[in-house]
Image 1 (tube, rainbow, N blue to C red):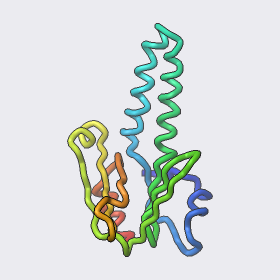
Image 2 (tube, rainbow, N blue to C red; image 1 turned 90 degrees about the vertical axis):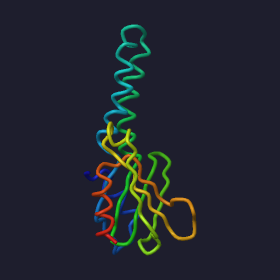
Image 3 (cartoon, rainbow, N blue to C red; image 1 turned 180 degrees about the vertical axis):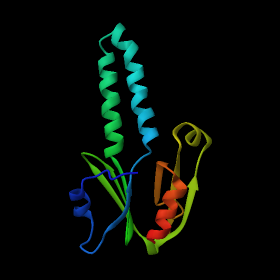
Image 4 (cartoon, rainbow, N blue to C red; image 1 turned 45 degrees about the vertical axis):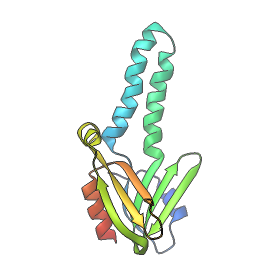
Length: 149
């Protein structure tokens, strides 16, 4: 789980005394499978029809987009979820507002993608405030969240 966004993008979001403790995105294997699905689909179509090149290009762009458009960070004050690329959506939850954290690892995701889901609930709503889906090592991510809190 490496740094995904350039530092300047996070700096627009962070307050002056705030620092990122942990930054991550979707699981690498999940992204690779999503990208390769389109590429593998495009190869036979490339020989039959020229439309195959569109599928192959879509595969490469889809892999890049998934990585760029799903960014998560734990700072010394809050959880940040930045989704989108051209249009963005930011969710910010202070640690004091978190009521419980749940990990879900559905069989299919765990087996094929080696990913899981971290669900963060806050006070005042029955619905989960934040769902970090398809992340690698969700138990390790929860440990990072616990230490950041």
